[in-house]
Image 1 (cartoon, one colour):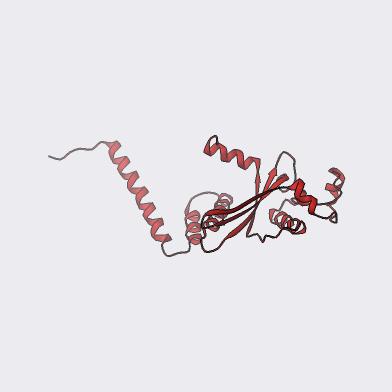
Image 2: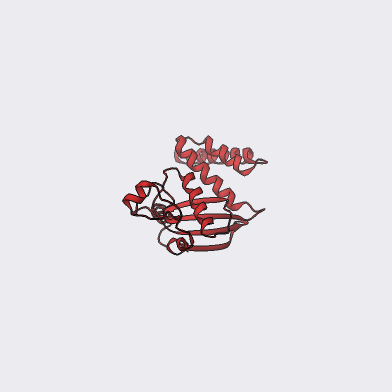
Length: 191
């Protein structure tokens, strides 16, 4: 005697089957490929806006560089207070030199820009609007994010870091605002 299944059972059965087949498809397409290429293919396959795809690809690239195990990576994290407006994200109150190997933190050094900027000579003339509006006499790391283009800001931050006798060569420079931390805490809950 044949047993009859409900409509709900068949809907759940087919949804699980489809999810399994999609996962199997991604698994076979990502086998034997470099991780970055596989993740980019998966992100390209997802039906989302181009701007969102670019953001996800950047996150995938960053994640893969953290998990790369054959060499140590050095990152500069710029902690920006977006309540003190600057075109590049906010006032840089602190920065971190982070070293990662095999997905594990090997070194973590946090610096206050107020102290670090004391090592930078007063030789850099700030851009006109910053000099006039903020009454800045010498341009230093804390105000290095003057451009709306983050790649320009990253190069300038590294320049000031080296001017302040910093010794590290960075593989990546990342800006973190308080909005990032707020959205992180909303996803993780209280820490």
